[in-house]
Amino acid sequence: MAEADPGKEPKNFHLDKPVESRPFFLKGANALGWGMQNRFSKIFDPKSGRTVMLAIDHGYFQGPTTGLERVDVNIVPILPYCDALMLTRGMLRTTIPSAFTGGIVLRASGGPSILKELSDEELAVDIVDACRLNVAAVTIQVFVGGEFETRSIRNMTRLVDLGYRYGIPVLAVTAVGKNMVRDAKYFRLACRISAELGAQFVKTYYVPEGFETVVASCPVPIIMAGGKKLPELDALTMAYNAVEQGASGVDMGRNIFQSDAPAAMIQAVRKIVHDKMKPSEALELFQTLKSEQR
Ligand code: R5P
Image (cartoon, rainbow, N blue to C red; front, side, top):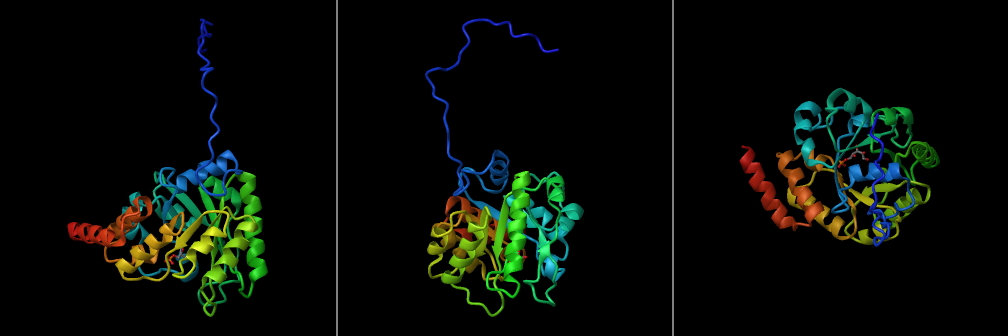
């Protein structure tokens, strides 16, 4: 039994200090519950307010993607450099050490392979399993303008409702079909619809013209999607521009794990996202770290 409080006087109630009520550091997240905010703090660094998320979920529709043939060999060594990891539950359980302390953003949709119409997705995870895996968020594609637009939105709203039940935020990923225009007008539409219908954060592509309007018109944090592999300086410049224009971080896959020096690349991306290092300096850092690895 704990000892009884001896009841000595005077006790100090700090009556001269009003109890502070601080806003949460992320855009649009003040009205969320403690659990959701705490989960967000495992994804976004509360100091910079931004995240470096590493996307390795490609296998859920395209199998062993180049650079992800062996996640244990290629990805596990660079885990210390990411704030959050976006992946499937299969890869999480089989390959990611449970001692990983970053945020897990769990791929919660799936169905069609790359051989079929990708917007034909369904929810692919039970929210209770997401809780069991202690994830920081769940994620789903939203195919605005796609063949199965209404179903993909319905999948997202269902996931948002399930997420609220357990305090798990939902990341909507604005997926773009092969023949669709990728411009600010489209991404404003897709991001705004995702946020209006409940997603607590949104991942979308960078566009050189008007990205800041995509961010401004979306009431929740926007994370920049990486996309296909670019030369390192171009990828670093894209990340820099996105953060400068208001993105709350990046979620990059191929531009990190398909680089010839993934550990060096993710460290250079970190400097841009968290410290706003200029792209040319980040490239120098990349080259230095790359040469040290040899
Ligand atoms: C994007 O829609 C999917 O989630 C991908 O599997 C992945 O996140 C894309 O990453 P990246 O385009 O940076 O390789």
